[in-house]
Amino acid sequence: MCFPQRDSGIRCPRVPIRPAEAAAGAGPRGHAADWETGIRAISDRWSPGPGAFRVLLALAVVVSHLSALDVGLPAVMVFFMLSGYWVAAIHEDLRREFRAGPQALTIFWASRGLRIFLPFAAAWLLVALLFAWSGHALPRDHRGLFLLGLATHGQDLLSISWSLDIELQFYLLAPPLCWALRRHPAWLGVLSPALFWAGLQLQAMGIVTVAAFAIPFLCGGALWRWRAGLLRLCPPAVGAASVALFLAAGLGTWAMPSLQPLLYKGRPDPIPVELFGMLWTLLLAPFLLRNLQRRSGRLDRHLGNYSYSLYLVHFALFVVLRDTPLAAMPGFKPLAAAAGLLAGLAFYLLVDRPCERLRARAVAGLRSWAAAGPPPGPAPPS
Image (tube, rainbow, N blue to C red; front, side):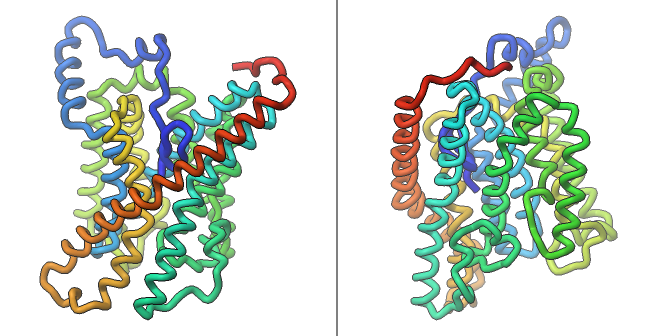
């Protein structure tokens, strides 16, 4: 999935931390200072950048599609949490820039929607051509090309696009959710379980909506909303401990026969696997908060953007390769994984980057239109 550079889309730039927030994120003083400095140095050396981390999440999805391990869904839940964080940041930036005027909504929806849709539509057309050439079945109709509703009707040519439908639904609902998060943050404790319950009821009726995945999105928004105070509570040692706790919870789940099916496909799940994925990945929240404060270099930004291309094209390629003589080779899965990585890179360079330039020009045009409009009103309250 994609997660914007500041004006990009499921990718974004690092939000600058104000001096007070930086002080809040500074390590402890006194006797613990040396220990904390050592932990911070280890974290800076070995922790992946925000973009590299998104590649690791995309690789978890690749592994899930090449094995019996069901680790792709938890990775998507982390993507949703990252999206909640960055969408809250982007929406607030636009709200302040245009003083809460309608231009902010127009630019927000256009920028986010195009970032998701343009590469998706290009991947859909390329995979349709690939399937037609290789003799693979195409969906009954082309509703899936329009994304919204795809998670419900299931006409998913790419086999991974359900999450993009959920993401697009979140973009549509983000403005009122961000308003609630800004003006009535106490509502979050009621809003998250209420939306999740409503989503489960709709899902029982065969309608899949973003409400069923509200918890990671709103958790990401909360991390951004309260990042200054949370950084004070989450020094690097806490971020590292959250990763250790996440891994320990995964190993514990695997070690318990009654819970082990949650990590494998094709076995009856003791609890809804989506709920397990959401709760499991919430353990990573302190690490994500620390990781998102790291400044991305040019390579790290490319890696983060590349993760969306890899996510889009890898599974369709696996489907085609499984029906070739290569599938009988002993090393087929590593070969397929390498082919998926290369296909993702080719798509990123030849398709995603031109799509991003087209999106950037469209957003620049909208900004020019907004600047030529009536003068904005008074600055919105914080």
